[in-house]
Length: 363
Image 1: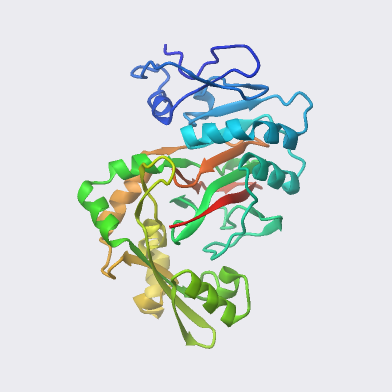
Image 2 (image 1 turned 180 degrees about the horizontal axis):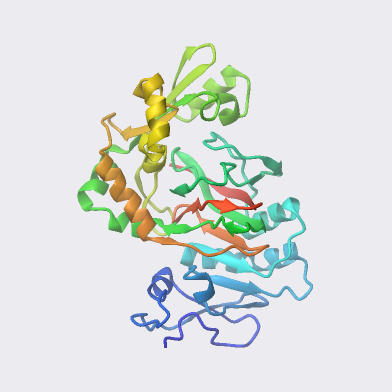
């Protein structure tokens, strides 16, 4: 059996790290086919890496014993090393930290990201701000699946870093699966990804109580503030009546990661498209409104329709490269938002996951 994923050195501060390719190849129990590569070490304090099989292939799992050191102090002391691991792996799952609440979570994220947390602007889903730009995860009904997506990839500006903290674990389900955006890009046929790369994605949104009203999306009741935001962010906007706003924006579908240079699939064409809705909901909406009045929809950047079979290929690619694990209380997951997409499985019972974002980037 391959030794990939096992601790190779018992000394405190010596941790084996592995690339995403190594761990993805090591998903089977036998480990056959896993490449034998020299381990890479870093100097994280009070950390060990154990078998990854219990969490089924998370790119890198760190088990932490802070030895009575305050969580924020541990995060500050190890921020540089955590950032290096995040750049190498794209996603980290950290276990063993003890959080006292949303305030401390926000402090820890700001420390490990070496950046203040940013607000959730130009919203597409309902969520609650707790304090200091820490939010609840998307507050859709528990029986709904949230498809894989990179946060705010429907805009021309987004956070490079996203952190999640599991504070209440659901009785059943409720995982936050992740998908490698590089592998998704590679899995999509060349002619499809080239067309998207050339044309981009057009997002059309009509803001109403059916979806998310503009007051919630833009966090203001002032229309002039909405218009100023749209002008600053190259959003075409139109007031169809006193309270009906429509926006259109063409954004990237494929983009080069600004640090690694790798091409990533980075858009929400599949999520905003009307075909993402259940058939009964879609039919109900189209019975009472025209397509251009739908709460949200996507097109190629030139305004032409995206083929349903193309959207299915994209969804299949995301599913193929999805990695899941079961949350434990106080689990901290850190993502490079461009390298990894995330989603949410349906769940039963109470569930709470907190979210914070940092390091704004504009295309």
